[in-house]
Image (cartoon, rainbow, N blue to C red; front, side):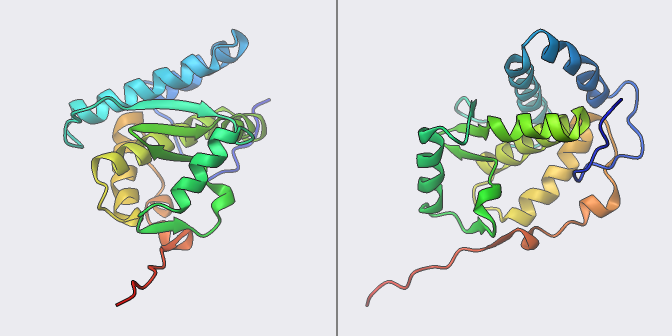
Length: 190
């Protein structure tokens, strides 16, 4: 029996010919054949190509990579700490919920969190969350000056187009300010 989807991705309908339906069909074989990471990387490549080819973002003069790192890994912890000390305008209100970030044109994704979503919430939430992360981080790379809310609004449109679905209106009206806050700027001495 399918696990009930408990995350934000309450979709009234998944069109049969959509990319989301394709991913949901491929996922069980990827799991059975122990090819989950290649499945995840393929979804990233397709997402990146789709966004660039459809000119949703400017063409990137460089390659973007994706890496899956367990949060228990020291490298992930160090990168996360560097992110906290970066010049970003906004920061998560609950940093422990950070599941991905960008450093040096590489999207670093918390592998343990993704596997936990798959186990606890099922394939739909896993695929939706994964692609949602990809789109979000690609938008950050393309538009580093945009706020989290501006990124989120673009993200919803891209998700619908890429996956061939219609997101619920309540999802599109989500306020990022519930999860992010402006980073406090330290005053510089005169």
